Every structure is written in structure tokens, then in C-alpha cells.
Length: 220
Image (cartoon, rainbow, N blue to C red; front, side, top):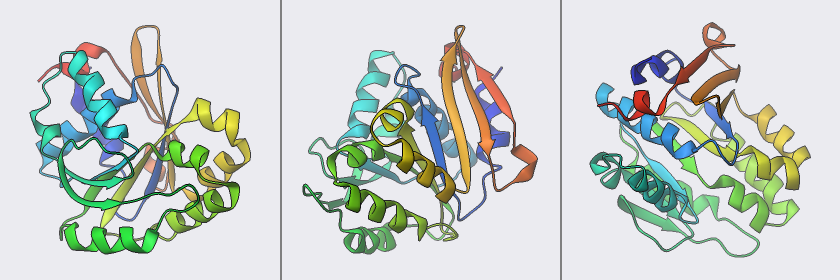
């Protein structure tokens, strides 16, 4: 199955959505990120990546080790949230201290760089904040994220390590899932990567599943 098979799910997402992409620790979510970026470029859809604590840099390094072509990823616009390794075109930085993430400052950066067209906005490493921040700030974080639901300048894609969330914050995982308009699952089994729609604002894609081999994903 060709990589563009994900288009029915990816471009079935609606402007203003907050989407959770839940993945297991061994499912190589960077491959889905790679696929999202490729399909957006093919469609001429703008991209903006939120890189939390160097999660984007880590993803690019793993993709490079897999032997994939990365020129497009190295030039994508990025907002850095914590971390120190710059990959992509970094347009702004938001610092994270032990207890707090300044969403007002994030919004200022976002408004300056978001294009007039609807942008696909992968957010990488959000689970790192769930571990680093105290419980009160994590709840505040989810509430702040919820204020973006319905803002039709973007489709936000929150990549979330499900294993970590189920171990450290299972009740907050449920809170986050309820807040999201769409929930996708990415896993790996029997030599195939699978993207499944668990919940969706667009009823026509609910229950959809796409299975892909590594060759499908890597093929130009």
C-alpha cells in the first residue's frame, strides 16, 4: 500500500482540530511524522513543528539512521519549547522551568509565524512535560491546549507516548483524550505499521485503518 493511503485520514482532519496521535514506545512514531511531512509537502500544505525538549531532533536522528532522505525535514519551521538541539528553521523559543510553561509567550510567537493558510502543526514530546511539570501545571497545560480547539488556523497533531502516559498519568490521559477532537493510534505489529482512527470529529473517518510497510513509507 502506497504512502498516500494515509491521505484519507490525514486530510480528513478538519481545521481547528486538536488531534492526539497515541503511539507505543516501539512503534517508531518518527516514521509517521516523516509520512505526515511528506504528504503535506506533496499537497502544498504548510507545516509548523513544536519541538518540546529536543523531541524533533531525536526523531530526525533516528530517521537518518534508518537511511531516509531528510532534506524537507531540515527546513521545516520550528518553535522550540525547551531543549538545546536546533534542527529545522527555528523561528522562536519558549523556555520551560521546573513548574511552568508560558503559553502567553508561545501564542505571541505562534501568531507571528503562522501562515494565512491552514497549517499542520505536529507537536512532539508533549509527554515529557507531563513528567517534568507538577500535577497542577499539567492540568493547566491541558486546559491551555483545549483553548486551541476550534482555532481554524491549524490542525494540531500531538504525538503522545501511550506507554509513558498509562504508567505515570493514566487519569490525565483520559482528560487529554476527552479534550481532543480526534484520537489516532499508531502501532507496529507483524511487520506492519498501522494508523487507526479511534475517535474523530469527521464521522466519515471513524474506524478507518491504514497498514503500511517500511518500504511503503520510505518509497519516494
